[in-house]
Length: 321
Length: 287
Image 1 (cartoon, rainbow over the protein chains, first blue to last red):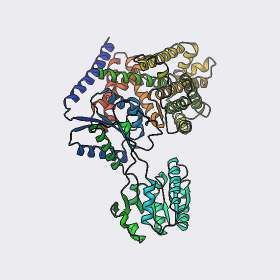
Image 2: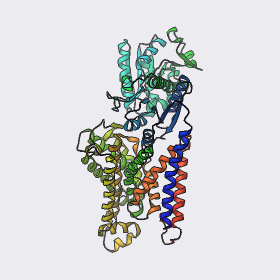
Image 3: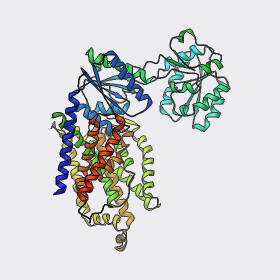
Image 4: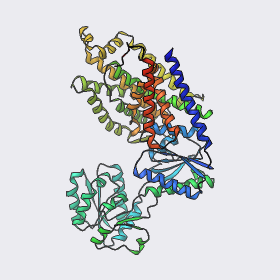
């Protein structure tokens, strides 16, 4: 008897708190538009995308927009729970999903309200981009063309480029192949240097330094973790090292022209603005490639190599001391 | 009000799916006294196999059966590691889950979208409202009923005895190892079926979907024991209660970093309520 009463009391308390929360949340709705943000996990890049989005959209819409930010903390089940709650609530005008699991979770539940995605590398492969889709947004694929252009402008004397990547990483393999084609298109010779594991690095990088004029690396986890060792060897041999992750430049790489996640968030905000205020349909908007205008350059490495920043890059350079 | 109904529907649907995982955790940890960490691996394996089969346009029911089969194999592997190689039960589970990660990756990659292929929910919908809820209820309650019935058979009784008094099995000339493996096969099969249903439900497979599944299972079991201590429908109720807690936490819309703590506090409160309910009965001391 006691058990039945307690259990029913708990159940009633639950339902009551749900209703109470709903009521309280409704009353503070003063903004004209509300956007639900679902972030896959706490991670510097994803946080940057979220902050860029919120900042930019607040600016553009003079604070007439409110955000409900939810974070699935890496759990797909939680992402789905949040997506379902977003869907059940009629107050939202659009959703912003950061990274693949969040994008998939919302797209699985919500079929009408526009969904803007960011930090998703290949939305087409996820089957999100069908003709009647309500999904649009920004991918985080690096712009290899722009990166190679930067390389040729910064190091005009380069003739042979060594591509340094890990043989076990699918993303690296794909990016390395694209780099090869792009470089060869511009008449540069390429040599591949595939890393098996971290202990190969000293041997392979020294070999690369003897054979090539420039070392180029895609976004690669092994390169990222052993950037100190790679940069030290490259400096010893006075060879420029170009990476694809902006965060690695302060560790001694010469330059990078990678994806800026904050910028991605801002681009997504532009899309959100077009959807909300200009009445555009998500299916009309293509997936936007991230802007990789900013070139990060390490001043110390630049001076050591005796290079100068050419006028063509001057305007887009971000110098790291 | 309609909004609450939608939320409740989601909670119950997820609660039913994870109810199978809760049942798997219960069978391993309460019946055969084996803390089964292979649950997470089996959940992922079931999901990956389902995604692969559905992408080949296989009849959706077949994918469920295949997931159960794969789960059973992972249970046998865990059991053999423990009984034959005498590896500690926690380690056996960890080893299996670790190994299955690679196998799962090979089966379906890190992410596989079903792209609107037939699932059990779309092929049996007949346009009925709440068909997802209905199909899940029939499946889950049916399974729990089946296992309940099985536990009352002779083999079922011996299975329960292996956790409590393994000596008894030896006395009647039964091999305890067989029964431990049998328990793990049921436990992992249930987890794999849960993983399979989750893929049917959300429409894609992600290698990260199995992260945290064990916690969902354990917490659900704890909450289930508020209602009833034995194997039964209470496990599904516990699972639904846990999903409700998670939903409530998200519904609060506080600073996201606090969410996990709020969930933890809510669970503690409910377990305190459980202790209070069970206080008079000194006889039932939880193991």
